Image (cartoon, helix red, strand yellow):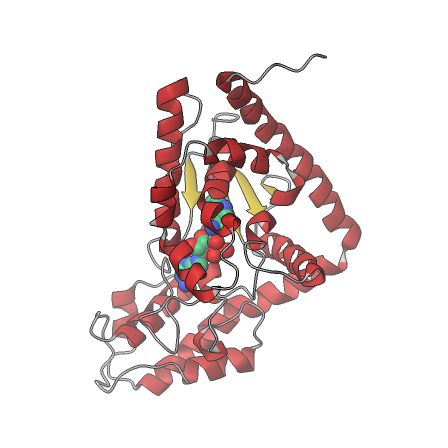
Length: 334
Ligand code: TYM
């Protein structure tokens, strides 16, 4: 608890092109609940290098992501928006927590299994211990709540397990965090295969709407979205493609799925797809314009980066020192 408010932590990887799933499943919720908490939003660039990255591209994407956080409505004065790599405590705590995490539990992580299958030529130790670094991110700030999409639930559970294990040995060192999952948009599926989540790494670019897609591209991708031959607008698991489009429309417009069904009752899929595309564009286009405006103001963005790295380092340092003391590392001589 900081200044009477609970603490929130979340982060996104600066890898690949961010998708509408990242926005609706995470960023949008971050903005809607940020006033209630002391918030730390990190661009988790340390996590990004579990997969090979081109240095210039990584640097550029990390900056774009940081400015997107702000463009989406996160006030960088009230919220601590920073690069994970600027706060060395993340890597230090991750090492300590590695020693409280079992190989067995890490090998059960779905994301590890998926990524290992996708990058069979580079199954590095970082990919394996990725969830421990994520636990360190969250626990360093004593976060009470972590807003994420459903795909990150397993990582949240292991974070809680590690924290509880540590606390059971050393006392109440870490706050046990809770996941915050939004009511709609927590799992946006691919437009081309509604059995798979919409993902930055999908080989088929038509399956994902990228946050930087222009209006024509958004409309084209929605028009081509896979649906079914039932030809009736209903919100049911038996029509997964349509259900996903209703979720998207619902998350973009704030209308409940049953209201959407009523609104489009008796109309064709073609009409509905165009309405979905327009609703998505209405959110993404202003976001892109604001991101570009911010990105052009180098001095302003640099100032935020500097100040927030200091702020994050201060809070992270406090927890790290507490942990080091509990463990029995010798105190520094000043
Ligand atoms: P990442 O970068 O893959 O995704 C960022 C956020 O977007 C959500 N998300 C989705 N939500 C709904 N539908 C989708 N199709 C979809 N795809 C992605 C994710 O659930 C996530 O909330 N390991 C994390 C990053 C991370 C982190 C953390 C998150 C590192 N440390 C600490 C929270 C707290 C990741 O790879 O997210």
